[in-house]
Image 1 (cartoon, helix red, strand yellow):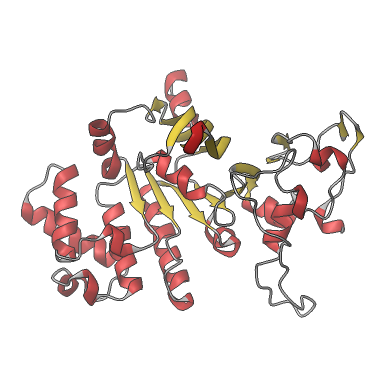
Image 2 (cartoon, rainbow, N blue to C red):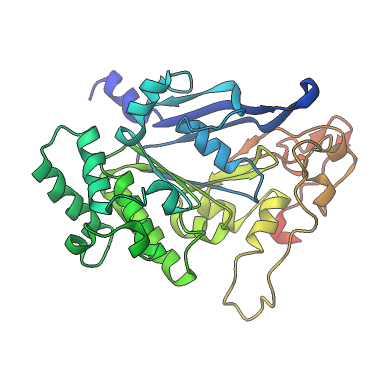
Length: 347
């Protein structure tokens, strides 16, 4: 393998750098919904993006696939797919990219499926749009995909309309649609929220297995830390438009550093007898028009000290995890003095 080939293989499939998303408001003011976030996704990797509603998770996913709704706009930073910048592509070019190289799985399958067309026809049309195959080959591929995602009686379901399928079945069809053209990257935005608990695990495993077999990378957007713990390789925890913590799932789960991550971990049900109840993060996320000075989480944080209220912490790398918290500076110092180096699991 040459130096050039090695560089290509080590290059992240998706790179988001300093992404800033704004919404213009009345009287010339601007709402910053995503404020300078950066992350990479390697080939074959599953990155979970987790946080409460309003954290900026879905806006980030929409920006990657070029579906950010007006008046929202990318006001800064860049998005690269396999080294090529895509956030500045014309709509026609972005349309070719969607489906072919980037697949999409949305929260409500009814927004992805046309209620007036049979599901088989929709899959066949998508296949023929992105791949140079005839009708018969597309039909075979469609049935094969439906079988792969675990849809019962796949051949018969080809003639069904979306409303004739259950929510879990519809989401399996949407996963099949997302994988039609063998994309390199799949954006899955809350893919299990609308499903019964008994079906959620099945759908998550289908998504994980199908993407793993193709070597496709996945960005899984969810508010459920339990889902991330089950499927993801790495996790980015978002709060008020910023990344609070990012790192390997196993490391973040075992030793969460940011107090907000600690709170999210407390929302995962345990079978252990010594865990009496779920933990609730006190308070609510601030409105994006009223984010407090300093660390946005400080009004809800049990470890807040003076510096937290004055200056926003930047992501600081320590081993494989980066954390935006004054409790976790490598030198354990801040401009106003020394920060307490408090490990969440020692509390």
